[in-house]
Image 1 (cartoon, rainbow, N blue to C red):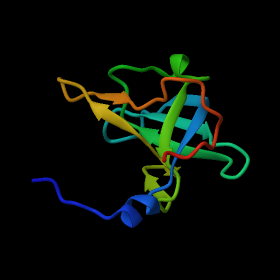
Image 2 (image 1 turned 120 degrees about the horizontal axis):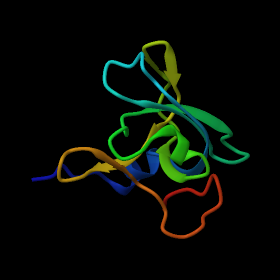
Image 3 (image 1 turned 90 degrees about the vertical axis):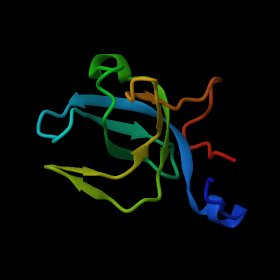
Image 4 (image 1 turned 60 degrees about the vertical axis):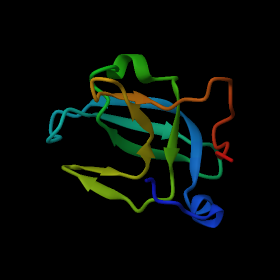
Length: 113
């Protein structure tokens, strides 16, 4: 059974839409990853994230892509890189991560509701 949470618990998680403005390989990471800089709009600004998405994505294809991310986790040190947000995705059948993205144009900073 899945643990249940309250609506108030859900509202504590700040999930926003942003646009990837920069992406780089992250060879220093223990597991294959890509460093992302995501613009979450004026209120949030640009946040960095380390994402283990190398099976389906490479840095050259990510710039300009809309993504969803949790923007209110505390920063986390990932090797030499400080990750400031958690970009969201789902495991595919082979347990590789597929990014969670809006299916229509959504402004940077729009909050999941």
